[in-house]
Image (tube, rainbow, N blue to C red; front, side, top):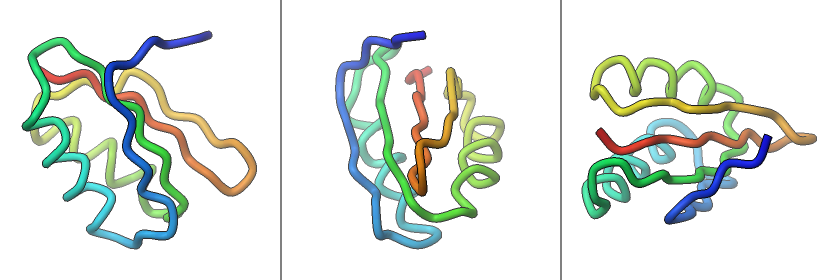
Length: 77
C-alpha cells in the first residue's frame, strides 16, 4: 500500500521523547487532513506514536518496520 504524504520528518537517531515532540511541531504547521510521514529508529516509538494518536486525535494511518527503521503515517486532525 502506497500512502501519499504532504511532509516528511526524519527522526532517525533520536530517542524518546524527541520523535514525538518533532512530530507534534510538524503537525502543528500542517493543515487539517494533511499527512506526515515519520521515519524513526527508537524502538519505543511504536508505543509512543500509538499513545500520541489517542491523546491528540490525529490519525495513525499506518506503521511499519523496514530493517531497523519504523515508518509512521500521521493524518492531521
